[in-house]
Length: 518
Image 1 (cartoon, helix red, strand yellow):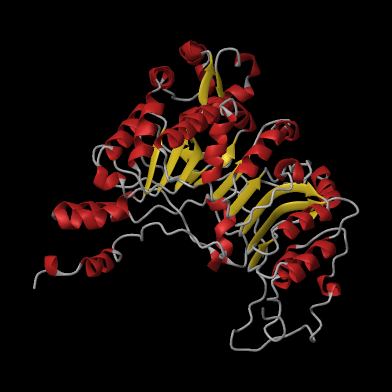
Image 2 (cartoon, helix red, strand yellow; image 1 turned 90 degrees about the vertical axis):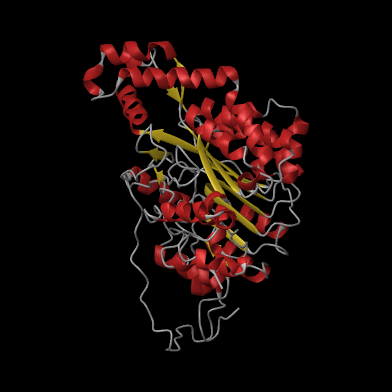
């Protein structure tokens, strides 16, 4: 009996020893579901893994069909002539296109002013720009302009979303190669040159959101999940120029929506401008099972929660997350009350309670009324006054790079999602992304289709771990009274990391192996 005579099921098991498993959705009841808003990108795969799968698929037609799911369940492409050409090649092969479940679109900053004056800038002021190639920059500018003028990206995206008949998840990512990064940094240091060249993210985000949205709508794609870790409020307002019915149709299809907004200035004002639009979208999105809306950790939003969510109740909601928000206790309790019968996971990262509110009001309500709650994440929660005092004193509150665990002591909750894409000249190979400190995906080489990790600025906040206790030893320090609110020891002034980790377990009744089992 030869290997080709083996059942496909056995061959798939063998294949899994040399390849990562195809993407499997993270269950909503897992804490990992909203950890880092599902934007976590994995470490680079073993260097020979893509080559091994490629060689496996070239062996024969049967092996090619078995291996395709490991290569193309996730596809990533860049907004570039080369990237769009590769995406079109994938979409033109039904046996490959039908396997794609997740599509990540990596979009660079747009040259929005002085496109024709890039060469002038680089020729007149080269001393601060190192060894940048003037001709290469001009080529990038011309290519970007031509793609937009001819609507080549819109054509290819529609072709791809039509061909990706199993598509579940679309993701917009911001990509920044080193040369663009050097130019942006240089321009920030020389304001007098802004009239020559301006690179901007909002128009790039707007253009990509509109073209992808239109493609999903026209292709009647089955995609039901959308995420973006660096969304511009202006781009959302611009996309709203479409007829309301368009956004309503797309929103109705959604089961999962994960967005992280950012803006250099006036984030509160811009988000308030989105209030009526968010009401229309969230009202139409009746099938949502998971929602995350986040903001920069160092610029928490001050709008009331319902200015964004408008007292909407989602009958199927299982996981809800917000990040970086100044709130009153009754706002959190009100949203939890609406979803107390369905909610299984709750994420309140970087949430600051205003004066007059206490965490010992919020947490007991969650513990006593959210009977289905399996996990809660309270990373870096605090009180508004303490946060502001720390800021005045110069304590840095960086945005976490989109890496690492949502909870420093619960790494077992993590599942990683990565991107795969074909190599430049064939359909065998994978790309991997590194997270930039500003939320962008850092591209190590603007001509390459794979990326190497860039150094992270600021880094993660590392907290001392909780003492380990052998699992074989029954341990209890509650004396049977940990149900009491007093056990929280909330002073209404600040929240330590050790406190919040205890509070997470207390809310879901996992604080004590003897008395707190849920």
